[in-house]
Length: 137
Image 1: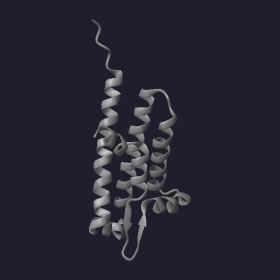
Image 2: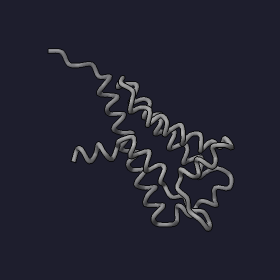
Image 3: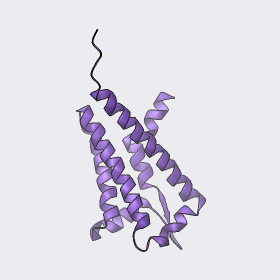
Image 4: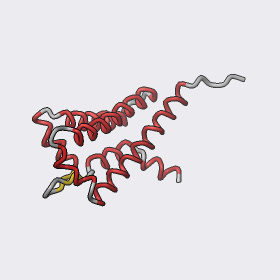
């Protein structure tokens, strides 16, 4: 059970779920990674935030200092949240509201949200435990 939890809240798992969120338009559907890549050359904010979040999460795997790792992962998770919020609230975003009406994209979005919430709680817990002074006898 504990190893399944570790797999579900691993940064790679979170990044993969983020990339493969399904965004439904009026006539087509795309994975969110394609939406990010299409917006990146134009400097679209949700694309920059999404890619920054992925870079932060994936680069945190190779960092050795634990407290820094937790802060970087929290920053990456916040970038994911702000990327999705910006994407669905930008002008003309009503084109993508089918994502919230269709079952498969909605289930993926809910699953990602729940796992991201668990990821954030886990990182905060680890950060608090890291900073807590050890009990002396």
